[in-house]
Length: 409
Image (cartoon, rainbow, N blue to C red; front, side):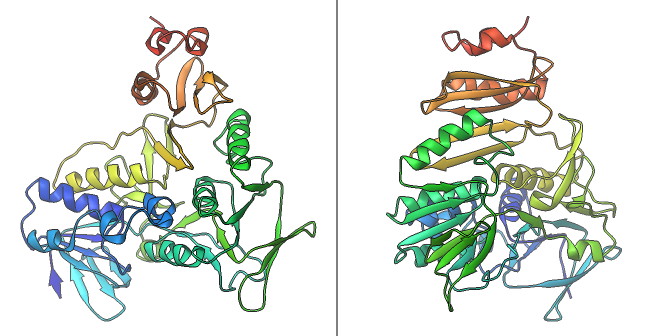
């Protein structure tokens, strides 16, 4: 049995950034083991649907830390290692190959898996999901010879993949069941802008569609919608959400409810066991609700915070939810929580690629979308959300004013 001070179960971004933080805080050689079912060292996830998928980035360029870095700092990284059982009382984990590991503190970071689309033909060759480096590499390889692609799902993964494939001169169709793209987050005005932007760049968007089946003999050749339309394709990427990988935690008696339930210190209901990243259901003190976030910024921030908690720091995790995306030649950022907002205010011209959207509740900013706007807007967004800042709707909407003038004195 191998005994170490800390174990991180999961080899994703939480592990990579937690390890970096621990080293920065004086981690000693031999104190940390990272146990991962993946075959690659911890890597950045955003490039999987952006730079790596497009071919601009390679695997070595998206690693959070190099193999030499882990060796130099005495961190034992066990790849391709599947843990089947956790003993929370003894802080032991048991692998499928019979290995046993024991620690003083355990950080769970098992991430999320792609939600499967339950339709005939979903197991055909040429049908992909995108969660891992291996997935992205397979899509990139297939897209080199693909002529027609269908992307299922109008969220950020579907939109990013559609953007990359369209720029490879592949005839790309985005199929969504909603009446507009990313309706869960975007306002109708925002959806209209992005839909027009995509269509003008060759992406066909089929809205309000149910997927009846994927067709082909051994490889996918077409998608059939519920109303009978047949859309030809030789590659299909499905992005219909993800589910947290929590079975091993639940089996160990750790409380699970849409993720591992943790307190403000990211600690689960078993002492010395913590969770971070996609699987952590944590109390968001800014919005007064529980939240589980599947995005880069949350994994980075909770990985860093979790590392400091492992070292004995007792500080609550307080963080404004943040998201960013790159599609075609656009980059945008989104902060906060749009749920429950009473109204929205637009700064700039939403018919152009330079505008921002501000969600308000009782005149307080709860969320903000910013694309190609002055730095003051980017800087104000998270500060105002965290402070529950009250603003003047009229002055906020006036793009000729400096945004700081919108603050109610």
